[in-house]
Amino acid sequence: MKRTHWYKDAVVYQIYPRSFCDSNGDGIGDIPGIISKLDHLKELGVNCVWLSPIYKSPQHDNGYDISDYYDIYPPFGTMDDFKEMLKQMHDRGIRLIMDLVVNHTSNEHMWFKEAIKDKSSPYRDYYFFRKGKKKKLPNNWGSFFMEKAWEKEPNGEEYYLHLFAKEQPDLNWENKKVREEVKKLLTFWLDLGVDGFRCDVITAISKTPGLPNGKYKPVLSGLEHFVNGPKLHDYLQELNRDVFSKYDCATVGETILSSIDDAKLLVGPDRNELDMIFNFDHTDTDNYFGYKYLVKKFSLRKLKKVYSNWQHALYNNGWNSLFIENHDQRRSVGRFNTSDTTYRIQSAKMLLCSYFFLQGTPFIYQGQEIGMTNCDFKKESDFVDVEAINTFKLCRKNKLFSLFLKKNIKNVSRDNSRTPVQWDDSIYAGFSTVKPWIKVNDNHTWLNVENDKKDPNGVLAFFKEAIKYRKGNEIIKNGTFKDLLPKHKKLFIYEREFENKKVIVCCNFTNKIVKHKLLSNLTSNKIVLSNYNKHLNDCLKPYEVIVYEK
Ligand code: ISL
Ligand code: CA
Image (cartoon, rainbow, N blue to C red; front, side, top):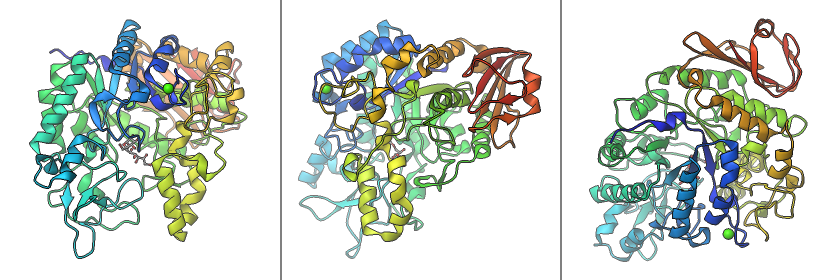
């Protein structure tokens, strides 16, 4: 199969189905709800959707705990609904990337149920079961959700490994049968016509044999043994050889803690592994140790350095993916020194341009196109995410953790990006006719798609323009990258160049007017996009962005 690398021309929109649109009034988003909003996506101009998991699941982690890879979570709809959605997407020229969650399954997956029912079951070796050591756990690894990574099996003596919630037992990829199962399910969905996969925590699938203790860390010991493990590249090459290479599909790996050198191995053109990866270096610029609850003051210089390093490193050596929000991150307006109040609209537009015109495939997260904000959660019971709940628990147990973490939960919790998409000003934001599974942001009365649509200077109109401008633009697809002011603390001005033509993106990351002589040299160029109608000569206004063509 000739692979066309269509993803290099894609603008991807991420749908988190639980929060997107509820068609049948049960408070939970669903597939018919998605179908009803496809024209919104078409008008926006995106040509690909990444759909977070819709498979059968007990929803301990909102679908990232799958109990049947071949069926749909009933509240989301049926297989027929899925096929209809796929058809309707394709009819509109929108491709579909599914979420592939195969580092772990749900504890309610048939494989896990068989494994705990019968120690001699072949499914036992689909997972990691180990004996404890002298009243201790099998090793000192921590889970990503603030717990230990081991849980005693129900009605048995051994522990099983779970790098996420205890309802998400890790799969043992050393077992060839597990890999065959993964290839089988990939083939199933590709044969149904899906266009690719976003591969959840794919860098964690290979563990150091023997599962040795890791270096002690207060929260996440053992990382060096379960991220970028020894067989990671073998496994990915196997998937590529046996499945991906046979379809004109695209893959994007969620690669927590991957360095640029790792990235070159994962997406290098001759490596035959993945097409793109999501790295988190940029979203980690405002925390300590890559741990998002340990919030740190944002540094624009650091963000620019990260972008610059990745842009240069993957130029002709692979392909970047570009994003600033997803279902695990808080909302971007109000983050990165921007404003979610007075300058919310300017901030949303400037933030888009700060990453959208880099080289790579850009992603937009649902609600970002109207500048949705973090939620006004008021009490602990407003939070529903397993990670937030575990963090509250940890804070209750440990005063020291509480001191550092508790104050950040409200702003940083993943629930912030999971509140219902605000379609209109009705009581449940046009998302549903009943009280949804998670709080609706009170600001939906004025911040919603319907309102934004009416405003020619709204966020939505700007996103449409930006997407239109990017489409087919060779400078943005193929051009080199240069940061024109790498040391500047307030301005991000980058240049893309291809065959003597340039696009220059000027962003002000502050709420003040910032003056710079470089700006006056640029004013003679054609403005293709900006979030203000009138400009100053040698200054950028608060959160102003101007995109020039030269
Ligand atoms: O959000 C995080 C913790 O604050 C990340 O560490 C996140 O858990 C990590 O990026 C892996 O995320 C993916 O796999 C998880 C799932 O909960 C996330 O929603 C998913 O994006 C387990 O499947
Ligand atoms: Ca529903």
